[in-house]
Image (cartoon, rainbow, N blue to C red):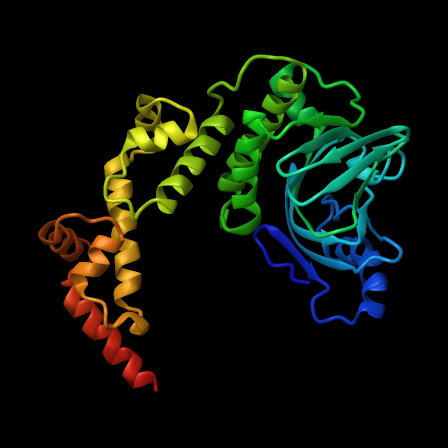
Length: 340
């Protein structure tokens, strides 16, 4: 369990624990995190081991003012968010649980929802409470936000019993991409960055609620735009090796227009082509410094990362790193020898 600043990050895993000791450790997660959280921040929702099931928990949770994001894998456990009357400062929370992969079963009183890959369930706290059973391994992502903050985007958010959100809901897909970045990689080192990220998640949550009400399609709020741009950047990085990668290809996969892709980059002071070029250069630099790839020619590496013109690659590489690809490779090789 690890809790560094500036965002409170909590990690827990049963890996390395014998099966007999896991149940007690899992039941204690909620209390243990509460003991180390700063005042005003709420711990992970309780986890209850399921009888006669192999138990495995591996979670990471980041808590900021106005947002908690949890991601990981659960198996042999019931996620049992606290009902109204037992949540303390979190009484007014709005919660969403996304079944990234695997199978989960959500229950509230007589209602039962089966969640498959990409499906989600959304609710506000009530006296009934809910339970999300994951008897077999399931990857999940959950967000918890103050209802009042999301209501600012919608006018009001009434009490909401457990509500199914299908996987093809566009705002849900954007939330998964954006929230996963917050949970797993984005540093958010300053209060201003934290505030912006939290506001974007509130915007996306409001768009999901609007979709469950049969409301308008996803628009251009700041959170929507930020999540779209992150999804586009991930798409580009996954296809860098495609020498014919174009804005039209990315736009088609992301179901937006090429003009909109250009606009998103321009709003951040970037261009599509410079983003692609710079990330190809970064990937090429990493490969050139990898001693395991010493038998690969510089030309082969340039083509592998998507450059179709070797002279252009050499020129832009030197401009960015102040050295030729060969010089960078030699320096990395010599440094590796010195460490041995």
